[in-house]
Image (cartoon, rainbow, N blue to C red; front, side, top):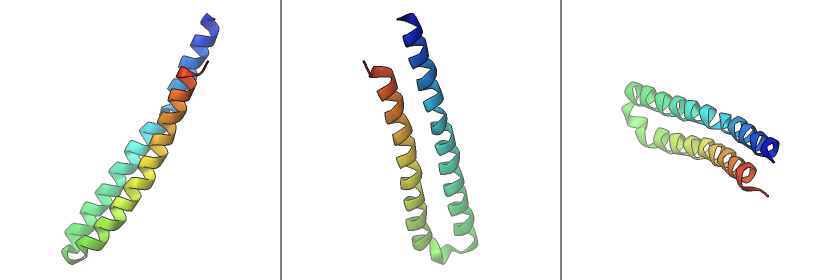
Length: 76
């Protein structure tokens, strides 16, 4: 039983590595948005829509990683 709990903990820890990547990805998306907005303020609205779409897609990956983590931890 102890080995099973240890394996679950290790698996959940490995599944959360995807959250690190998504945090870095969101940072890159908004850094590119701010850089583009500084270069061309008139395109602010179009760039914001693209940034929000990128944020949503990256966040979906993060939520999937979190879901897998919870499934690993709380499965029977």
